[in-house]
Image (cartoon, rainbow over all chains, first blue to last red; front, side, top):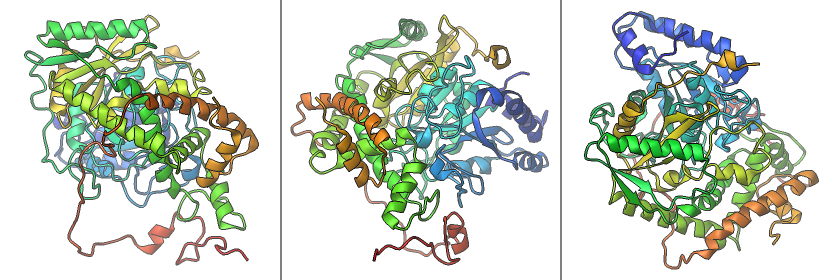
Length: 483
Length: 97
């Protein structure tokens, strides 16, 4: 069965060649057929087909009208269970929808289901889900990346034309790289976070997974914009990110980072990224060398700031107003038992690191120093972007690793995020675009970063690369890959 | 250098209202120690006079008109509560006798 892009579905519906319900049926059939092997979905929306049938009778009035999609299960959906892949929220049914879900519903896009993630988006492999493993559609023995592994795998396997994820330290871009799809983290503040279950509020951002850069622009159009319900959302006028996509890279300066840490960089990944830079140069871009001297400290900085914010955000799970409660005779013991049974190991690990980094006596040495380093990292980017329009790096140092390979070594897992974390610390937009397959047939991702709120240049370069990269996006043979 | 002992794990967990078993404390201590040792590299850099960044962009108070808006009905807000009396959330005794 053919796999379709957002644009193909959108045009077919607009020309009245097909109806929304046919696309939703296709999506549901493909999920039914493949997801037993992949495990991308935690739940399907039982209403999806009925909603699509209601749309069949209407005239398409928005580009995404009738397009099926999936949401990472840390994005709240009114009346539809939202778990953040945590036992503590196993039965949580939100009384409201996230702004992104509401906006997509208004466009006529049809939610088919909620996807798996690392519990509370903490992880790089989706193995920290309390409920199930998700497998990489290109190799079922490997992880899809994380934390938005379910959304990445669902798009990669062609189950939905697009899905949303969230990116706190690379959780959209890294799984997009591992699964061979496009993953866009918009600028902090570009997309409302209202209704996104908070992990680290100064870093979290919602964005799309798609098969093409143009599709990412269409989805960004639909979900971006100021939201009075999110005080950190940027008060900027709406933009059409599909405009100027095809302007090419002639006259643009592509920054290549000279002092990037290549210790754990797989030579095959390096070769693919070098080839991508060469392809952009042949397409007319000027390649310039830039320096990001403090990015070597990004992982250390992030793994203090993110857990500190998480330890504060996750204090709300106390078993009182919603979520799991393990009741005892005393309130304090009820809190402790609830949280101990409700949270998984990685979440506890991060709450403890964060609480430690914020505790008196350690605050200056850890949390404050991390915030100061964040300033230097931000300034590195300001200096670099005075000399170039975008910066390109690998998205991840390796291709998808094996299930279980890093689960007992948290620091190794964290180091996988070294190329994606800096953009979150600086609030910048970033995208991962497939740039090749390894000798083992595993996808490799090219990361492109741009100035704050310059998604247009980001998407333009990504699109230009997509056109000159010289290969079609591969569709994994999930049924063939199964043993 | 062991910074994070099992006792430290238990103490910090208590601050965070987490009960950790002995087995968990035993497993977490060396992992947390390794992570915090890695973070130690921030100590080598001279950060004197560098202003901390708590947020990617300058943020100002965001205010709105003080107009009453629709809020959620009580039964909707109580629907997810583990225990209620129909009007309020019910919890174990706060004051211990």
